[in-house]
Image 1 (cartoon, helix red, strand yellow):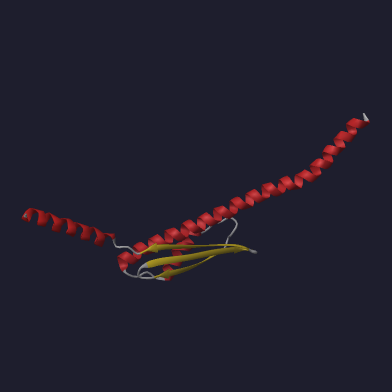
Image 2: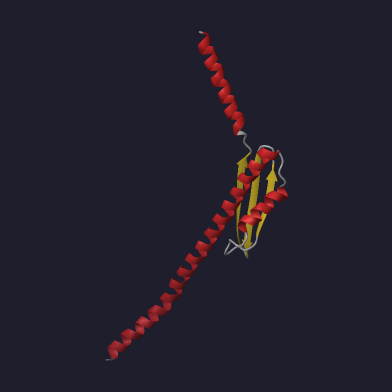
Length: 142
């Protein structure tokens, strides 16, 4: 009987050493999931804001950085779990829209930079059609 009690006591001691390690691994996994969730939310919102800014720049030839920052904040409102407060800086150039977003929680922080080119696909399509038309006229003349 004494040997059975000794075995039960050794299991208790082993589990007392093992449980903090298991809890640390579980909590670290949960923390990592929250971190990457928030990073993906910030990255997606920054890219979507840059693309929307690119389209607005193409249509109106001007977009205010404050308008882009408001769009970013609208997209991240109440979506982050770990990093509740984020900051954003938008630059709207003639050729490129740039969105820089960052968030901090204590000593931990993350930041993303997304860019979108201001394109004019309709001009490219018109140029191709002109080239095809010109090539077609030259073939008819032969």
